[in-house]
Image 1 (spheres, rainbow, N blue to C red):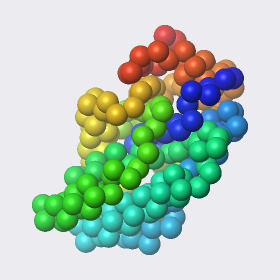
Image 2 (tube, rainbow, N blue to C red):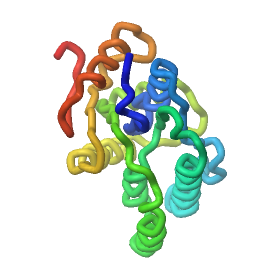
Image 3 (cartoon, rainbow, N blue to C red):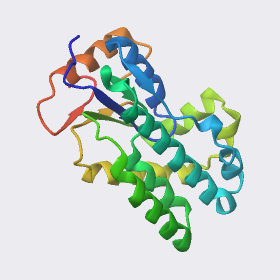
Length: 213
């Protein structure tokens, strides 16, 4: 399917919604390269889930610099010689900072973020996957990643609310909001075909897609 107008696609959403799996599937389907988060490389993340107050700042700083370095490599190499699908949007990075950092730490983070943000490329399309927190909790339990066992339900509820608020105001790139509660484009070929068709037919700056509509 011809999606040539989308050279840089980002799939986003809260923990457990399936953004990385869809990013991989989408890249495979359109012959694109992937640019994926590397949470396993963050030495503070597991400690953060156990003691968020103590490890929030180093966790957040590590992710900020890691993501910025990945995006810098993207713009400095020939990756944009073909389409790229990523599972993270730098613009959403402050969501986590606002949820976990104290005032002084957040001010420090914002200074660094505001300095680095202009260097990041803007996507041609952002796909935001939505699902209710209860569904995400079940998915996180089902996939059984030990590091994620420390994620509290209250944190996940706050995270989902923050994502919704962020993307309600997001205007930097065309946005397709996808209800991921019933749509399973990773495991169901028919759903994936529907999603590709919906992406190809996008005309507006902000559109919604729910299975059955």
